[in-house]
Length: 65
Image (cartoon, rainbow, N blue to C red; front, side, top):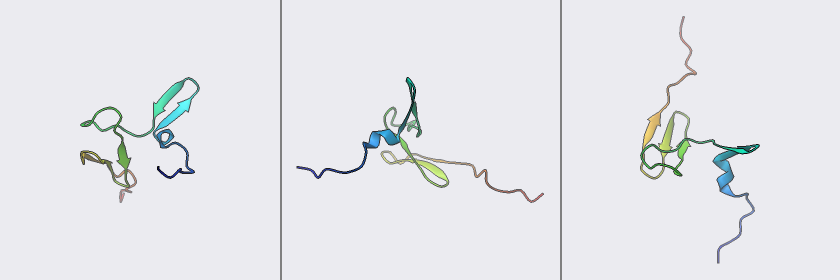
């Protein structure tokens, strides 16, 4: 049989529960559909199943004005 882990159920990392509502924390993949979440990297969002990638605009850049 498998080894028991001491960590909480990993599904709680993807959802936020407030009162009677449940919100998704991470974005879902537009190609794969519901239930497949995208990984958050420093400059992009990536799907581990289909390799779909969205690059985020760098909002931390400071303009030289």
